[in-house]
Length: 291
Image 1 (tube, rainbow, N blue to C red):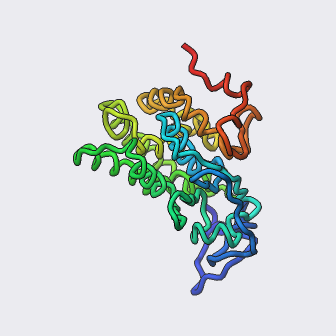
Image 2 (cartoon, one colour):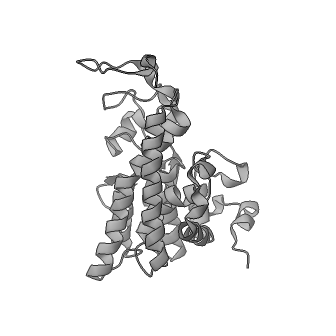
Image 3 (tube, helix red, strand yellow):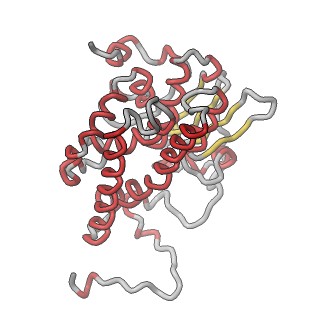
């Protein structure tokens, strides 16, 4: 590393708007709304404000899985929040999630609407509300929740760490990429070892732990995240790849991955979801599991 690349932190940090890279226009060191905007409300009990990123996919998969089980109370409206446009800083969104991150959920089934934010918290809230995808026996429940929070704690190393410096940072920094690549590969090995001994992450059954982990590490295992499959040699994690394929065959998971999605082939996108019929016939044909 040459001397010109050595950075010495100043005594007091100051915000330089020009140093944000691809997301410079939405990153800032303060919280709170930047503009007034009232969030829309639909007809269903649950109002979701989100985007089809891995964190958003967790919740739409959960909702579609609940509906597939016959829980009519899980009907929802999914409103698109375009984070690149700063929608998450509107006053209405900040009222639902003061942290200005997607996804955010408003449960309007109670006399007074209940806000729920942070993807893991939403999964746990919905699992407890509907009594599904969360074991009731103490040992199994503890295992499931441990893996759920493993994802919440590990995800930032994959997303804001590796993903940012590998794919989005304006300057490629060898140390940062090496540091986070090493950690992501360690995490993949943790997951691969677990899935070598268990059909699902939490145990014998499909749970919210799988729904939390699949959009991140399943996508990585299939080379769909940051175009980093070859770089990280993800094919060597064979148990993760097989698990990712198994979940991808679930019609509800495939529907959930479409909701609020604005990238990729058009047939994989459903910008907003307000009724089951929004998955049109042409798209529904693509969601059927082929025998």
